[in-house]
Length: 83
Image (tube, rainbow, N blue to C red):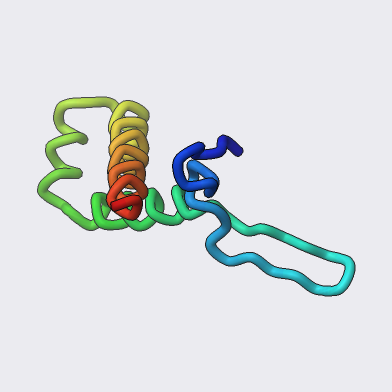
C-alpha cells in the first residue's frame, strides 16, 4: 500500500471495514476499492450507457472500460477528501 507523504494516510484511503478479533486482524477492502465498487454499480444501472457500450465494443472491452472509469472516479473522490 503506497503512502501519501502529505497526509500520512494510505493513498488508497485505508481500510473501509476493519475487523479485529483477538488473534485475527483483517483490514478489509480499501476505501479506493469501495468507492470504485459504488461508482461501477451506478454505471451498471445506466442502461443507456451500457447499451451504447454493448453496441460499440465487445463485452470484455465494455467491462474493462467500466472498471477503469470506476477507479478514475474513486481516485477523484479520494482527492476530493484531501481538501
